[in-house]
Image (cartoon, rainbow over the protein chains, first blue to last red):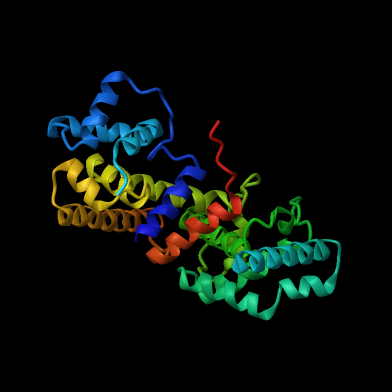
Length: 72
Length: 238
């Protein structure tokens, strides 16, 4: 199943779906702060839905979050 | 590495064979239109909801369109780019035609004198043509994409983001668990539930769009993969 979602993601990217759209908008300082908090496990539950919507539509938000997470 | 080389060599041979067939090489055409290829395409169509007659007629039409101009359309094989296996290209085209046929068949009752359900050719010929339709791609991609969009829209954004962080961006489940303040098993269960939901809702939407189409999830994934390989353009990050 994990491999299935990679195939689906590539398909949707290739055929330009809106799901998980790949905009690379500049992040606002507020969103950067929220992503830093999420990476540290300190983002309030009430703020998560909006931050998650940003993660699904803005590739820059994903990259920023991944940079916050220490490598295992 | 070895597998990639073998695939590239096979693809290269297939392109050469297609080019030869299009310039009139009978042996090359016969190799493409082999009894095995014919049986495979017919079987795939039957397994996806076509009757034996429909599968045979659609496959015969497919072969007829492969090598020569018909009805003002260029030979179908001219569209084969070599990005994926020729067999996948032909199968997809046949499936598109099956989808097209079944959708048009739904309206057959509105046509005067279209009473015989077995008269495939007659009924088919009376239906309005779609002159600009690219039967190698459009309907199948559109259908797969639409079903996925409906399924994704039903998923809670937070759970969808978690699933993507783990399954696509390769974050460890333990790291995500710390970020969300969840147990790792809760993260794991959430991801599994999202995947099952996407699968079930996608299949349900496909059934709603085309109730006659008999696709399994494995088929769906395979069609997505073939679509990306055969027709996708490299993504531009510019």
